[in-house]
Image (cartoon, rainbow, N blue to C red; front, side, top):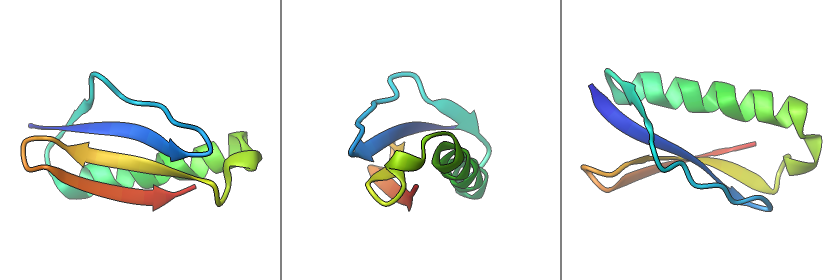
Length: 67
């Protein structure tokens, strides 16, 4: 299992100190997409101003998904 960290960057910044385990990058990326969709519905003011940041620290990789 690989550990991925989900944070928010932009109008609202939140860091994930613990992370979540996924078997691969695709599963983590899909979870981040769902999180961004749900966040856009729950907090419409964040649309276009905040991104979900997915980080894999062991490879120093970061993915951004717009809310």
